[in-house]
Length: 348
Image 1 (cartoon, rainbow, N blue to C red):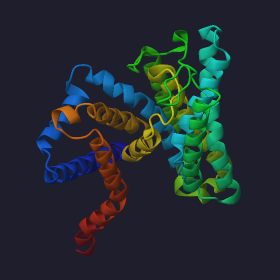
Image 2: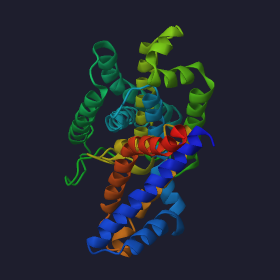
Image 3: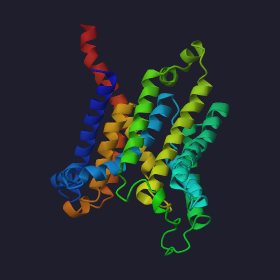
Image 4: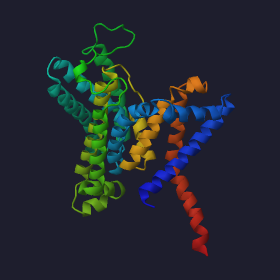
């Protein structure tokens, strides 16, 4: 069994354990665990249009998660995907507003370029702080998330504010219909094609290029990379830029696809869920595609939990948190089990 397949199997095991724990918790809280599981399965995969709803959430999550895989493999813990997602969407929205009325064939590519550039630049400054001064990138990227959230509030209530809005939620003017790449469903051949292209490109980058080999080695043994004559500084900076660009791309897709406008605080858990997907997938691009579809199904199931099981839709957040708890604890647990398993054989 390959390492990536083994990692996925272990991740599935811990997801099952997390779901079982949540079932026990909800049962003691007065809800029906069997109905909860049935609602999740129905809402995620069995109901009419369930596949489309799961893909609506899974596609942008996969794109962001692949960038996080690149960063984590290189040994840099970019937790700022949420902020990079927001800044990418903001930059794309400014371009779409400034070029309103121009041909879509010109505006759409420029919006994507602006979104990816914005996300990359928002990842650049914590990357430089980490590489130049040794600042903890976990802290700086988390700070970047808060700053980007405030920037989103500012632009939707200021420069990009929709003058005809109701005032209940700050938002920008809707994009022109010609600039949209999907309807509100969030699934279209364009978005599927972009996600497939990103997946293929990142898989090739990780598995078939010197950068992929060296970045993976850099995350485990930077000294060995320097012995090979490579620059850990360049590898680290490139991983930050790629990660930020892909998060910005996902933000642009959300803007020009299902949302159609900027809104204050939209998809506040997107970046953190993408981090969880990358960890559950064992930093594998192929695994990220599978896991992203699973989490897309969970997001789709949130619509059915209140109706079918009487649970609030926030129960999905509890399930995600439980999965995160098990996944982050799994490495130490596996190490202990492995040592306990090997001890009788090594002492005999």
